[in-house]
Image (cartoon, rainbow, N blue to C red; front, top):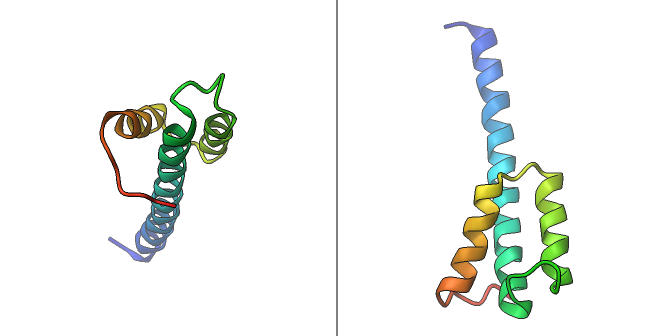
Length: 80
């Protein structure tokens, strides 16, 4: 391919690695907030704060909703 492709590829993979770590961290925070105060952001300030964090790192809405469903649906490991 060429050297410029390798540079771009390394940049893309580094960015995707950072995004994956952020999304995982925020997903765990959402799960903890939902377990502590319920799934409604209007009554759960911790969940509202997690939503703001998710928006700030451009986390997809379906990932946020999936984290909420997982937290409400079944027992998870204790992340605290």
